[in-house]
Length: 75
Image 1 (cartoon, rainbow, N blue to C red):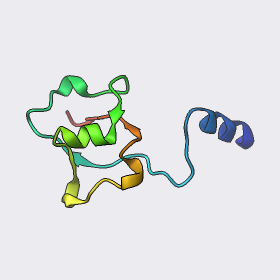
Image 2: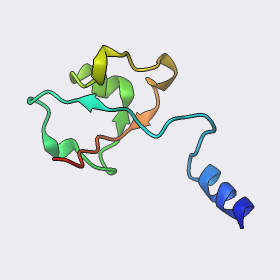
Image 3: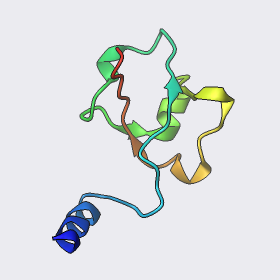
Image 4: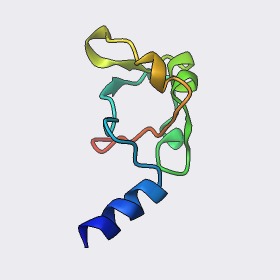
């Protein structure tokens, strides 16, 4: 069962050692209509829109070309 679950996750893009996400601040100029799993963009594109990691940490260089989604559970 565990092997089947692992195979499923790998098939859908799971990468060993990669975190699940980053906490970010979103400028008011960024529309909430961009939120959701159907609105993926490269991390570098989100950064170009002014979205930044909290505590002024940069996004890891290895993640900049990866696709990311803006999820706003608190609105």
